[in-house]
Image 1 (tube, rainbow, N blue to C red):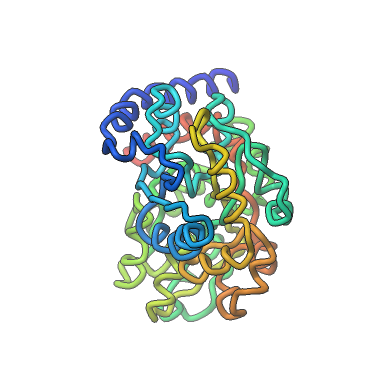
Image 2 (cartoon, rainbow, N blue to C red; image 1 turned 120 degrees about the horizontal axis):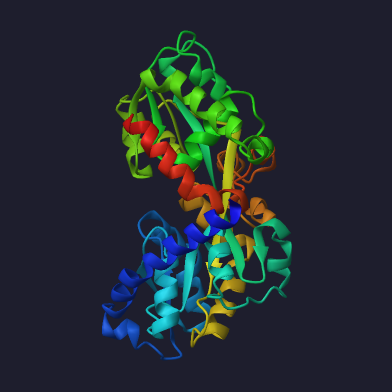
Length: 361
């Protein structure tokens, strides 16, 4: 079964590559042909990330080296785009930023990434779980539970409280995404995060997760599909309690709304840098990635957007009040666990099909 699911996952990966090839070929000519030594094009996540990365990394790198860094917005999951640029040789970007470690793992399996330089002291300071020969984390994002403190008479401390609709009456939101929502259901049912792959090793575990979802389904007011929806849902009280990404919840807190993050039971993902295989500027890209591992530069990024630095030394340069809101602060990290992408990768397609059928039933 595992082999079958892995083959299905790879077929899905290949199926999307054709459309991504068209995207790569349609890129502006000045980007596709960019080969000047004084320019580095980066596949960028866009929006607030571009603004934060520009202040923390892009502009300082240009000031220090004379190399202009040009952000080129890409898809949320650029796996097929990376395949396209490698196979066509049309490198619309020289490296990618904010790639999930799970996506990087898939790209490595398909031999689509360049090896990185792990030799600098700053890179060495990044924990081994956040880097490998082809991926170096720049930041960490957590999927957590957020709630409005003015909607409940007492503090919410876990996903079990979210299922307690009598003890905590209020409007509930849930993510319309199989992996995260199935994990949350099992967490609410008392399964430790690290044991979820073991529980889901057989049909009884899947049945347990969906039985737990059945229990809360009548009380879910909003099924959200885009993380950008969740700040508005919390601000307008369309939801009083809602799982979301910590940076989204933090943006609501920063805007003055009475929202609190529950780190307990959260799961985090490492995001970072990769270089498409054959990139003509791979050496310059490696230099840039090492530059971005500097703790002071990561601290600047964390001051702009609510992500956790991968280099623990960054906390020496972050205001303690800001540090308290970041997922890699040791006290917050200790209440969470990593997303097990090696488990979810092969089963994700099966999980999505089952979850979508459940939603429609």
